[in-house]
Length: 147
Length: 382
Image (tube, rainbow over all chains, first blue to last red; front, side, top):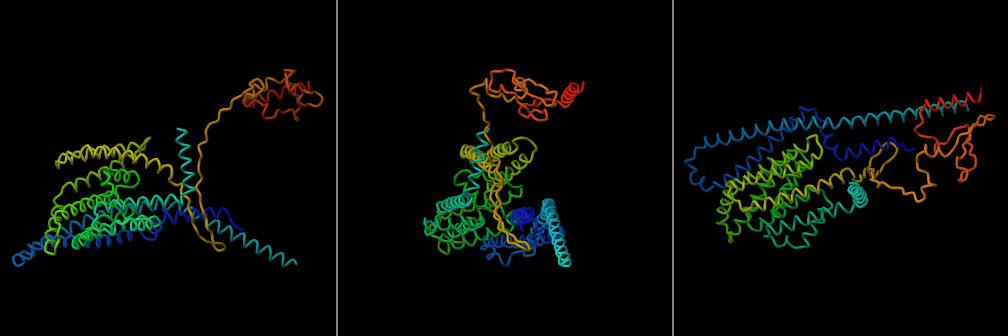
């Protein structure tokens, strides 16, 4: 027979899981340090790709000059400038990532508290159902014995 | 006020009823207008400008998530530029990837701002986007809004230079690119506009979060004021004072639209019908969850035509028309109308000596009841 209380709770859980809770539940699978580390790795990758593409656009823009002065260029100085800008950019983004994603993780934990509370109630309902089932089986066994 | 509440309830009810139709239709209209504006703004590829193509793509966007609309809008822009210059199309793709790497990946769910800002710039109301972002999201949305500003100026500059360089032969492509690059990096108003939009988002967000009445409404006004002063400073600095009037009108219209959006957001938030499916050990469940609606009922005024006979609603007054008689034999209490000619001239008897609630005064306290009971007992047993 349908348990209305259980259905209501399951509906609420499903709405949360399929909607706003999807991201929070995904985050709950990680420890905070692991999650922030993963995001730092992604940030390093994306900043590196973005920076290389910017360099490509600048090289294309300066291509005539670079070809003309290819022999006279101070590649060491250019390399150092490019590297320093990259390191500064990366530092800013990594610090921003650590702060931003730590806040995001903490906020998601707060939102998940209500979800976990509902799960606890769900577990209790399951336990009650199992006990009722076990009780019913015992009664039927006693009845069979008496026959 | 009651009329507004009733209208709100009515809108909620209709939205719940026709949600399956309203959502796709709204998305379709939004997509149609967006693609139309992109076609009229760039318009190099004639095949994309055909109504059939626009209608089909809009129809597809109506039934897919909003990120698909953003993707198609980007594809339309790139294809238009591609028909003007292959190199520029490659550059546009690279710029999109750079914007994603540096800005968009931190707020992908607000990617629609990248399309909304250039599209609304053509209608002179781009200021609506930062106000709405501050109102509904968080300050991280200043990144997608900056992307929107960059995209708008980038396409504007490409269009400007493409018109002057009519014959784009292979030899002309690199100078064309150099001109565009110089123009994009040289225009300080791109940075200024992105900065003002960021300030508007922060101002609206901060005021909205204040614990006071009408915080959201005040936040819209605060955002509009910051926007006007920010762009005023920009216009005066970059010598584009001719657009000040246009900017002020645009801001006023954006604020008005933001108020309308706020009204609908309050009305329709959490009213959408949810269709979920799940299972347990015994059943598969396909549940349609409909949020409960509170309908603001109109207060009804009851008018008594014949006031003499009609009950006034005050039990105490009504009780005054009856006299209380104690039957000493049975111990029961009788109530007899004082006015013998009235329709209730018969003696009314209530078992147990208690008046029904209609005749019982609501204000009678426990002490009064006790004293009355003791009086009755005293009369019964002298």
